[in-house]
Image (cartoon, rainbow, N blue to C red; front, side):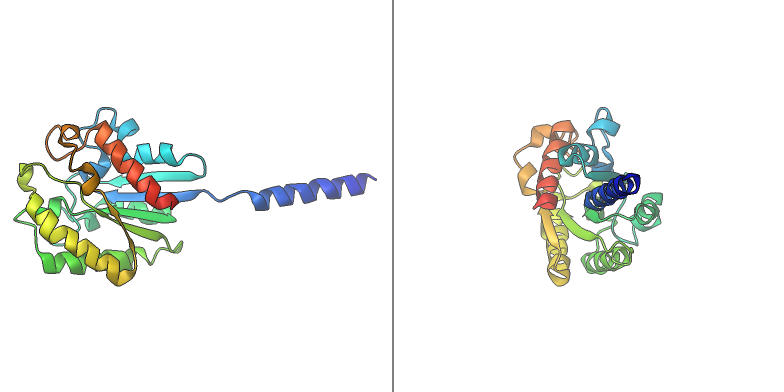
Length: 212
């Protein structure tokens, strides 16, 4: 009787462990907007932190944003050389959200041909992660003036079409963060970086895409 009880108990444990869902790990690649620059209580209100809260149990989100970073390899601060890029590989994510392009729009950085080439290279590099992560490409948030050299016209006419081109080539989903924020200039105190409310909109849009 004891053996039978023990067998049943072990069987229940095995069934329970098999039925447990694996936590979905999400890495958010980006620049200062992802990092949460200018947001009060950045560690609590940046968009990746709010995303983690919205998604809830079963998800874990890594903020891999680096202030000033670009997608372009030849620029003033390529994301490729940042520690945050290495952190993404160490994290072994199941999902990767890429939001790079705002700093690429600066006149001394921008090169459309190289942006397309480097974005493809990044997609290929991230696809080498053993978890075979699902990759989302984000259209950048709007820039409401040319602060720090960031150029909204380049974002609209250069960065966004380039992202859409690579997304189509690689059959990747695009998350539009530009249009949902165009009417919310009040959420951008310095015209470039969203505040807590702006980051919240980003988190909501991205969470909807991930859960779709």
